[in-house]
Amino acid sequence: MTALLFDCDGVLGDTERDGHLPAFNATFEQFGLPVRWSVEDYGRLLRIGGGKERLATVLDDPDVWRAAGSPATPEERADVVATWHRAKTKAFTDLVAAGVVPPRPGVRRVITDALREGWTVAVASTSAEPSVRAVLAGAVGDEVAATIPVFAGDVVPRKKPDPAVYQLALEKLALDPAGTLVIEDSRNGLLAAIGAGLATVVTVSGYTRDEDFTEAALVLTSLGDPDGERLEVLADPSGIGPVDALTLADLARLAETAPRPTQGGQT
Image (cartoon, rainbow, N blue to C red):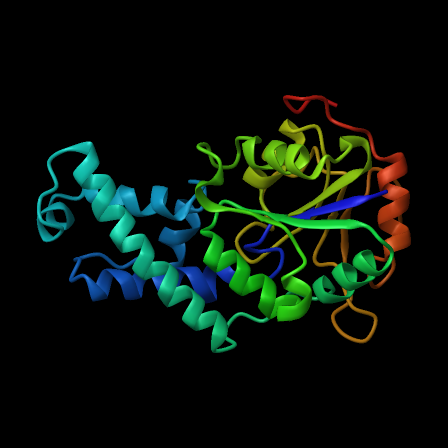
């Protein structure tokens, strides 16, 4: 049986620019912090896996540190960041509920088809679990989302590009890496997947199109929809040749033919 492991941000929805960035800035405003991230700032910060980890960087600014109450110990800093992150997660899920972050093309179709055919489908993300579940429900509906396992947030101690979240998903779902494909959108996500020995399809997002995806089994602009946005193939080393929209048959063929990275990412 084939399994599909989806990243969340940039894969289920193009969430970063229209969802997470405004939620971070709303949080800074809520707590009276003298910082606002621009689109360009946030693009650079995306190299850091995890929202708490990105938030922690602002405490290096003396003005922000003082506005946060001058936390003196690592524990105090962690508490401050955790408080900010809870507020940021609430701001983000409110935006998702308001329909600000629509699902990416093909996500609902591929997930629905895969579940209908008995494939295992799960989500593995470095974002907070409530954020991931909100995006997933927005993409496939509450009823379908409730059936899909989610591995997210602090479920592992190390965030992507570390492979820990994919290794955990493989273990908990008892999946065979040889029959498991990952859908990612970023180089950090790709490195995490191949580090777990998993062949990966990349659907580039607004922030990631120019990143290096040399190790990917297939690189697309999106999963595509027959009656909507058509996909563009950016790299197809396995010769799958999807046309207009990636199908379950394409994915099954990729699972059979794509070279499998070894643990640590070497093919």
